[in-house]
Image (tube, rainbow, N blue to C red; front, side, top):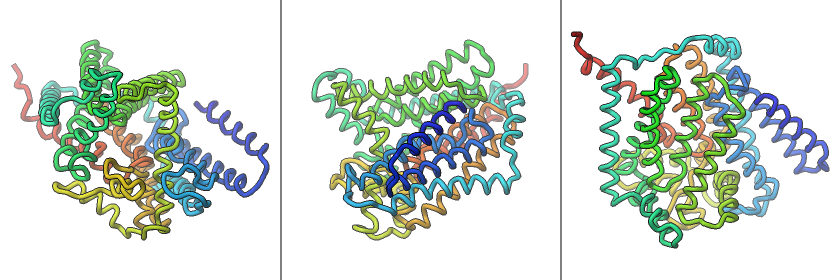
Length: 465
């Protein structure tokens, strides 16, 4: 991984040196320097380039799905933007690169304040033995009960939605109706569809099959890695299949992709290292699965599918963020805190459109979906560039703080699973807003799972014979 990083940096340097120098070239060189610097700070703060942390995972998603596409839109004066375009948006350039600078600054401040020695403390952490605080049988009983309740409630939810879109689409494979089923599934199985913009049904049930069941599955994955006992391999495999089915059933791609990353991060954190071969296998499986779901949704032509996959990774999310900077303040005034209040209101029962829904409607004039933007986009909409810089600084500080707390804690399996969940949730800040990350993707619910297990341990305590 370290060699690959150095080769990549050298390749970029050679490419930049060979370029004719003009304004675009200077700005591109500056942005590459800022990006590489932020990556180096993140690797330094983690303690190793062979280890995932909240900041490195965040920067990975941000670089692939926001930074590359965003810089392309900027250099090309917004050509191909979903909204606007036609001039060079320097506000966007400053925010995009400034967010990386302040993220790195936040990490460095956390390292200094907490007197953290990244490499030494990570090495010390790796030398510890794993322990399992969920080992006693009475605690595992509470976990099984929680798993059973989550499966039952998810099945009730599926029944109330009128069936499983995945199964319907498979039976209609090869016809135009498969695409209609996929389109309608958004209204059936996400909080952005029918009754979208609030948690008055879909959002609350999402916690059972998007967070709780995957969390328990990851715990038994860690349990198997810890014990190497076949019984835990079978339990983990069964839970993995159940979780995967529920995550794919609505024909949405992001839940299963998130779950795959969580499994990979769990494996990586347990092994305490990142292998290039593992990365290749993981990426290959992810691409194949992404394309399979896309095929079931009704896109059959391989050329179009390849174009869609590339655009979905490198363009769509960046385009949404760029378009927001085209809208504000040229077309719409700053929200001054109302954007985040829209998302907070969306957590409550009752009608209320989220900021992502408003943005989609404003950009495309269609109320059928949402346009989730990176957390820096919503901060910009609320508080201008100051919001981006302050928010990025705090995000960097928190990312580093989470990693420091984990490395300095006891090396337990449940602790690792929570760390993996928080790592993934924080990384999602590259794509969505703070409220979604905290309440929908698992930070709050994963801690509530631990509270539940600890709170019920005495109830299921087995009496000695």
